[in-house]
Length: 92
Image (tube, rainbow, N blue to C red; front, side, top):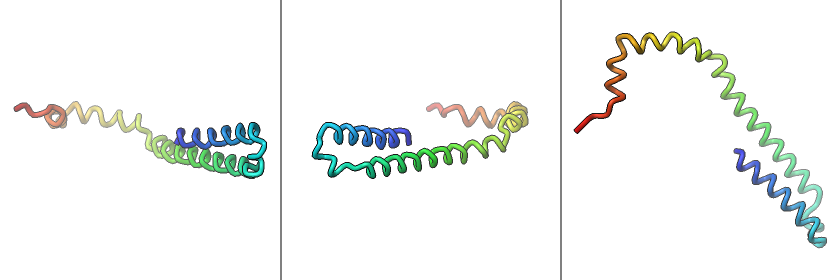
């Protein structure tokens, strides 16, 4: 997502440079184009924040530290031989 936003920003910068260097391009590149690029960048930034929050909230709500405290003794007990057998690759 970051590379996509960088691409949009680079398009805006290059379009601005082209509009300043080539006077004839002002008929094709208007301020409305820059306004639209800014709006789409803002929309993708908000979408990116929404995706971050959608991942963060369930992790925070589930309290993984509390769950880990309960799971570690179980892995050291009767389940430990099963776990070790699954981790080791078979030898030929």
